[in-house]
Image 1 (cartoon, rainbow, N blue to C red):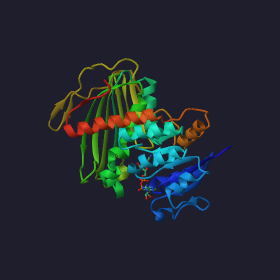
Image 2: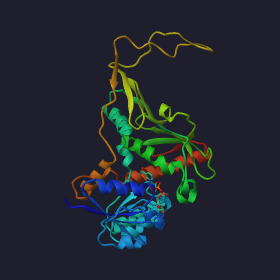
Image 3: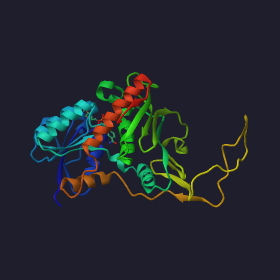
Image 4: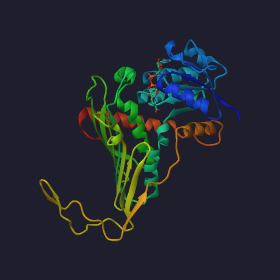
Amino acid sequence: MEKIRIGIIGHGFMGTEHEKMLTGIEGYRVVGISDKDPGQLENVTDGIKKYASNEELIQDPEIQVVLIAANNNQHHSLVLQAARAGKDIICEKPVAMSLEDLDDMVRVTEEYRVKFTVHHQRRLDPDFRTAKAIFDAETLGDIYTIKSSLYGFNGNMHDWHVYVNEGGGMLYDWGVHLLDQILWMMPDAKITSVYADIRNVINFEVDDYFKILMRFDNRVTAEVELGTYYLADKPQDKWFERHWFIGGNKGSAYIDGFDPVGKIVRTDGLLKNVSGKRTMTAAGPTRSFGPPPEGKILTEPLPAVNTNHAQYFENYRKAYWGEEEFLVKIPQTRRVLALMDAVRESGRTGKSIAFEN
Ligand SMILES: NC(=O)c1ccc[n+]([C@@H]2O[C@H](COP(=O)([O-])OP(=O)(O)OC[C@H]3O[C@@H](n4cnc5c(N)ncnc54)[C@H](O)[C@@H]3O)[C@@H](O)[C@H]2O)c1
């Protein structure tokens, strides 16, 4: 099999991961790596070139595809440089820090006719794919709510991730993944309005908490919530991490953890009011927790999904050789960036923002 010859720019946390992944799967050869900090190249695997500059990597005729894994504020200029040298490009997320920068990248990649996509591999997260499989199966009836949350315990934000001008903050970090997942789950639904609460809980410059509500024209309201600094004494208790909740008029689904556990509880009819059951709480009785309707409740395991990070690059390889489409298309990443603008505007003004209508 002909191998795709890759050059990686940026050999930090993610660049090192890419080096490992691409040396371990079929159809790729990592030719060389550059980093603006030469110290970052000390642990590059033997046999992979280390360049003194990005320019040297970009001009190396052995390299076909440049994978950009440098800080967020470097993506724009590195994409332009690589495109002008005729290299195909995979850029880390967020593809750009603004729509204007992305449009510029699109103009140049089109002008130089290079392939351009983004590493949104979290479309392959098993928790997300489980939620998407449940949504696609349409067994919960009319879905009205989807909640996707990520609660970091004792989280740390570090290095450039705490500076605005470097593209720091959790919206650019996990935010683009979480929004991309929701938009990709319901690609045909338009968002009618967006409301966001964005906070700096302990950081001076950048967001480290957000709650985003998106109302769609398919009658779903999706809520995405992320917190970075929930305090946990026993992280293994799994009160935190990753959660999904999906509610429809025929049932509910609960999904917990990156390696998801949970269940689907649904009826074969429609949910309806059942005669009240009195539940006593310390401050008084409530009838909010009814008994399940007789004989109609189906409890089902989560659908099995078989997805992983390597599949992102398997798709890339096939798409590169024209056998299928790229999983991540640039207009999809543009939609996420446009949504991020509305999110930020809502966060700033405290108002809900009309979007896509
Ligand atoms: N897809 C994912 O799941 C995922 C996960 C983590 C990070 N990322 C993305 O990967 C990128 C890198 O993040 P990270 O956490 O690895 O950061 P990092 O700080 O660990 O690594 C960044 C590396 O890029 C180098 N660098 C910076 N500017 C450069 C330039 N102009 N030329 C060459 N090298 C340069 C730095 O010296 C550093 O070694 C970011 O865009 C981030 O959003 C994606």
